[in-house]
Image (cartoon, rainbow, N blue to C red; front, side, top):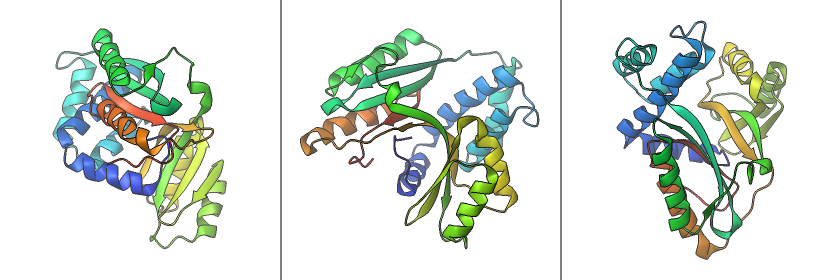
Length: 244
């Protein structure tokens, strides 16, 4: 996901995912494997796994694939251990970039990420070099056109315990405390509100616009990172870049 979370970006991401399902399934599969390792195979007692299964189904991941990943993570079909690593760095024009990875080979992933930053006019930094510019928040997207008025959405979100609601032309973006994401999601769904996207994300405190002549290099950096199987999420603070 990008650093700023608009419904147009979500729709584009879905379209891009449809054209590259194998890559999407790989990324979601790794998240599921980690969730199983941390909380077990039963989604009823493992909320993280339950949400990821929902995410996988929304991406049209076959049930057989989901079950295979769960069995493999539990040790029934062998086992692969993935380690969570977060990289921080500067993109072109001093932009801030955070890269969240799940990998079974730290050396490979570190080498790849460093190469992308170097190749496209950025530099990989140390832990904490840009993360202070972001806040970790729960984010939920609800598309408009479902019969919910702006006032009703505000009411439902506040009653659910959300911190803020951003109203755009085509969607509602609901922000929560990261630890409250699941409870807010459950409350909204109990009111028959269809959630198009949800997750814990790093939201910039402030956005920047970078020069037009740097946008091409910035886009190549983001695309290279997102195309890597080890990379799960990419966050940035640039507001004048639109993913292709």
